[in-house]
Image 1 (cartoon, helix red, strand yellow):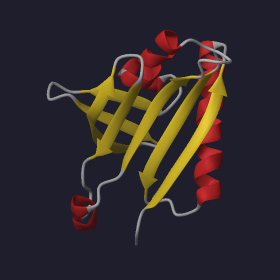
Image 2 (cartoon, rainbow, N blue to C red):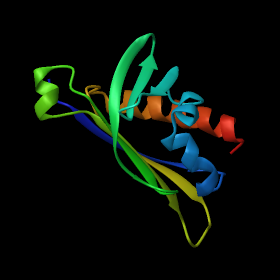
Image 3 (cartoon, rainbow, N blue to C red):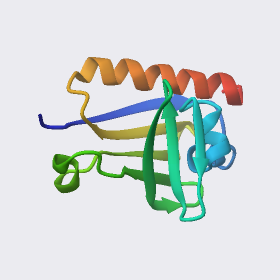
Length: 131
């Protein structure tokens, strides 16, 4: 089964500096993104959803701008085509609005389901930061 690429933009009323820890640290991600997130000594993130662990490596980040996580392969197919997600914080210079731009490359093949999932996650983040 192939993977699906989803992208979405969500406006949020919070500063980029305030949001960055929520997209880059285990403690921040635990508050809105997963049931639990931990980091081991090898800097591998362990994301837990519904008591299932999924290990990922942060393969890219830039302070106050973005993070990108790539999941470790769970199948042979994943080795050649790994799942990942990226969260970017973008400031509209004209309106001073902050947007969260999500890119999700995963096994979920229903774009509408992915949009609903990310909308719900971002709403949770908004409630957490008051944005």
